[in-house]
Image 1 (cartoon, rainbow, N blue to C red):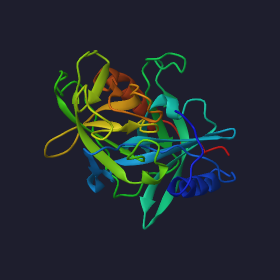
Image 2: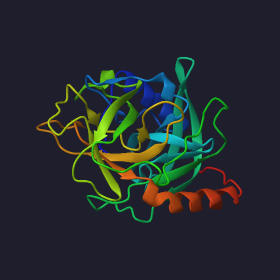
Image 3: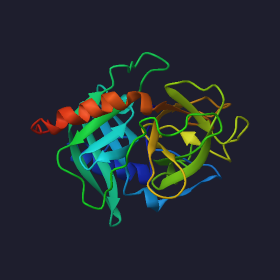
Image 4: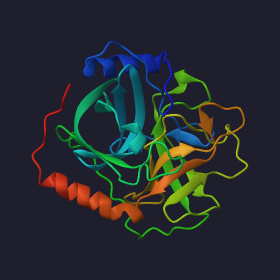
Length: 268
């Protein structure tokens, strides 16, 4: 997760996040999904939140998906090793923060490896408001094939290098691209797409890969990275995601363990 100085809307985001963490205003990277084929998507607001972190003088931001009203699914590198983590969501023209009391990092994650099982679950100090709706995750029911259509979502940059374009939850329809792996997904509009078509950018990590169509959506995967694109430093056209079906056992075990534990108080 690349960290950089922010301005404009992201600076304001940094200010209230820093205040909640007991800091002076710092820097936050954008959550990102842009390009011509992305669009604002308020229908996903009840399901998707921001995950903000602080370690030392560094600050980070990612996306997360609600699996229970007190549990959020995200990418492991967004929260691994961090001292303080909060979840944030927009409300009445501002933002609300909720503290995180526990985190579970997938045992197959390695911060040093280029590819690993980059998944984490975080447990909140208190449940989210009733308007937030948990989403089910894939247990193998969703067909895993090249060409399958999914939806991805995230907050943040709509254009390469433009921090002022961040701050709106957006979604885009993508397909599963060739080089299919049992535990991972390559997603995008096409191998030859340009950033003007689809931009999966720094900070989009942790965002959901969802089924499309009518009715309840199912979380198929979690975005953890992107493939490089030309000289772009913060965006790419092809995303990388961890499939959830092969990890259903780990998710279930973590949720069961937390349901039987007293909720610890967050540390400052």
